[in-house]
Amino acid sequence: MDSHRRCGPASSCRTRRPGTKRALGLVLALLAVAGCGGGKAAEHGAKAPARTLAPKTDAASMAARANVPVLCWHQIRAATGSDSAQDRTYIVSPSALAGQLAALDRAGYHSVSAQALVAHVALGKPLPSKPVLLTFDDGSEGQYARALPLLRRHHLVATFFVMTVVLDKRGWFTSAQVRRLDRGGMTVAAHTYDHHAVPDYAGDDWETQLVQPAAKLAKLLGHPVRIFAYPFGLWDREAFARLDGAGYVAAFQLADKIDRSEPLWTLRRIIVPQWSGAELLRQIRRDF
Image 1 (cartoon, rainbow, N blue to C red):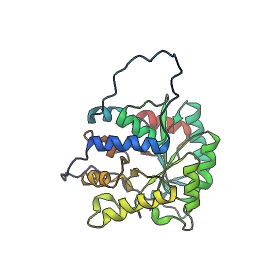
Image 2 (cartoon, helix red, strand yellow):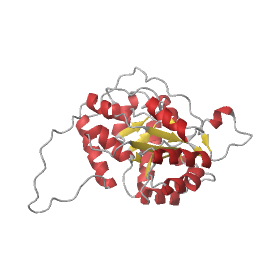
Image 3 (cartoon, rainbow, N blue to C red):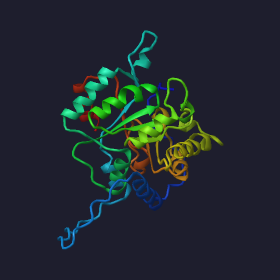
């Protein structure tokens, strides 16, 4: 389930475009659930801030804001002799991850939540200087046991895209761990039921892979789950309306070009392998 094919170009199938107003309304609802935004109330007698133009929310403006580095890790463990060369592209040792996170910290990057990044892209909400979104796919136990302590050491937040089929199975997240991630300031998001590629869906697959996982995670966490990651990074345009109908507000692919007419459904990430911290910084500068 951790082996990812390279994400290919979107298919040319035609579908209705999700309603922009509805999508933006759901982004605002997402922020309310996550507790983002909402500064201090103005003090009595304080000078009113200068009026500024509201950020544009057309597709081209959203696409222009979708340039924040988004990093993707998979298994956090030492590689073994039984791991193939393909497997090793998705395995990062705890010591390598420690070096990567330390490099981000020293370089002045500030981790942001997936909700904050989506609000920035969709609505122009501000982010801190040098923002970066850290993501972990699938829900393998090394992410909780080995990555989470390193994130906390550096005061970083991350988003965990979880397959629901693996919950409470040996070697994967437990339901209690998922709740603790959410309550500890991390974001839990959906990654389908069992990691089947989205372009292959037909019939009941949309319900099984999109609707039911979001409902299961929402029941577990006590709030809606509205962010999604495509297995293998593979997507097609039919998925946009399906995701919208299932209540999602944004979806992450991998390293293919963003669809500039639908940026919220094709947000880019790069997979992080066993790089040094210096190499990770070089790749960020190159890819974003």
